[in-house]
Length: 306
Image (cartoon, rainbow, N blue to C red; front, side, top):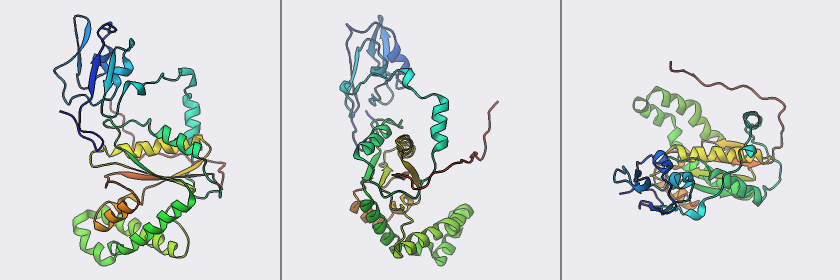
């Protein structure tokens, strides 16, 4: 038995070197699937596993003697690495400074983002936590302004073909079915999106992805935890900021390319393998405007349970 993903449907395989095992019990503590137990001061594979090994690697990473190896579900012991020293980790103040300095940048210098930085962004994004390993996040990378513009032009043509979705007659017909909040969003957001994306592109103005020199689209598969692409995109955005790039999340493209035959054909054209419950574009580039001030944001509500 194993939890399926688009990448694998087999359980991981656990190997225990009993000669190295000192019975510390760390593997028992960290395995959320109850995959281990201690017998005669040695770790053994438990018969009480719920889902079968998902190859999260927690046991292998926590074992102080290297007695545990996990293979399968894209994991192998050769992927282990020593954690960075605590001294190299940013302090809260330095992390907060990075977060506070980040702005949503939509105007960029006519300068290519170096391949090294693209690789660094992807390396950082791959450290993002996931609902279930192996990660089912997929990434499409548009590595230059020409590719970014071509996607925007294609998306504009596609939107034009489904513009009836923002027509008054369709929204009036659907109002009883999708409720007040969706009706307000359709009138106040979706309808203007069609207008600004399609009409502006016909004038040569790209309001879809702003002709950024780099864009990445993070999406999942039917098996993916919906949060996974969003978290990975966030890691990528923060990595870009740390590398001196301006960044911006674009959420309006993804919902339009999920349903229907035309959406499927559009995805296939751009190598997007699956429809996905959640997905996000992030654009990157060297900012053409630099900010001197920030504004303090707030949540809608913070309720502390007593």
